[in-house]
Amino acid sequence: MTVIHLPFAPPYDWAAMSSFLKSRAIPGVECVDASGHYHRLILTGGVRGTICVSPEPDTTTLRLSISGAMAAHHHAIVNRVRDIFDLAADPQAIAGVLGRDPDLGPLLHIRPGLRVPGAWDGFELAIRAILGQQITVAAATRLAGKLVARFGVPLDNPWCPFLTHAFPSPDIIAESDLSVLGMPASRARALSALATVARAEPDLFAIGSALETSIARLKTVRGIGDWTAQYIAMRALRQSDAFPAADIGLMRALSDAKGIRPTPTELLARAESWRPWRAYAALHLWMSEVSVTGSPQ
Image (cartoon, rainbow, N blue to C red; front, side, top):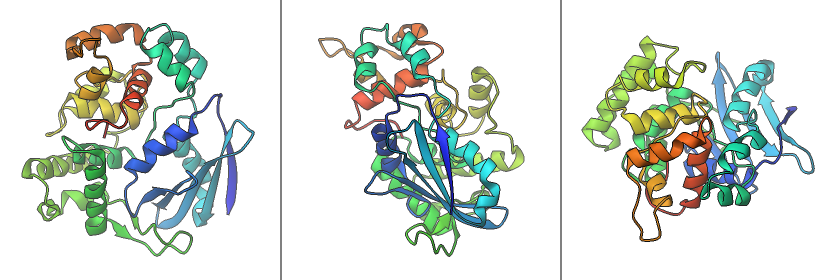
């Protein structure tokens, strides 16, 4: 077991992060335990292992535990974990912009250390986002579990027996008959299209492109519209200014006293003052609506 301590700028809302990840954890691949600790089975270059991420009490660090031979790949693992848990965020800079908004200011006071959850792998997150289109978070999580059980890579795991699979690669999904999962045909075609593009363009989920470029590229994939592209950009591409303006949860969270919601166009105009932290604004608004159907996938 290798243990690495990963620093962050306080505050950090671990409860919100672990809750978000728990409800979206893909069965067999990852989980959040009763203590709120995140576990994941990973496979890299034929080497398998597990990671566990937890808060280190009374410090401004997270504890990353790596089991198995994966410890030899700890540099790459650290980078991915930092992305998942958004450890590069500057809460003071974010609050300095969003805190001026009359609706967001109180939300930042409630959750001053809220981060944008990232992803271990961009392709995996994009598949999960497509699975979640127009269904609840719980239903999407179950469907992701079915996909992994049928097409994932089964692995013997002596460290954590309830983690059983590595997520299927673009090659596997592109060549599989996804109709057996019982989803709408259009959604199965979208998954196949994404896998085909991801196989042909390995840098599809590379971090570093301009937001507009990333969104435009993702939207060329059949089945990925603006909402899904913005969501992928928020979580997988670490775009702090990504913003799915047509999201019903965001519009509902900003309803006026009469219950009238802003239109996507009105919401985009309102969000101009939130740049370059619109993704964090979206998370605060979503967390205020966390129990409402239509929350982010």
